[in-house]
Image 1 (cartoon, helix red, strand yellow):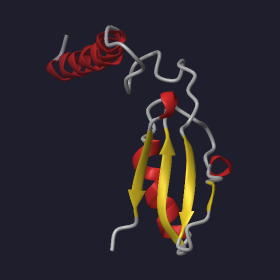
Image 2: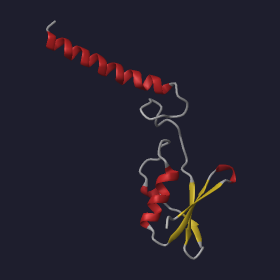
Image 3: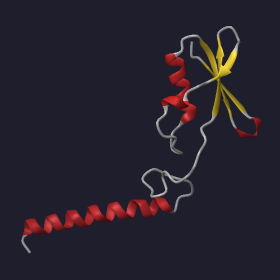
Length: 110
């Protein structure tokens, strides 16, 4: 085997090991980590959020129509409030309603 062909064979083998090895290692991690075979297999429901307007009125945050595919690895709690503050100027805060009655309030940064 020529030297150039040997380099190509090593590259191919290394690439194949990565393509199989990374998902196998991730398969052992509980949940659905990125780059694992079960990444999209977990069914999730995104958190319910409530918008608190400047005058104190509250209404449900309708953001799911802007998300094409709900995935378990999306950080809804971080991304959605930022999006709502950016697109709706009259919001004072966003309440995130977690299971078990827990509520997280995110205020608009001054």
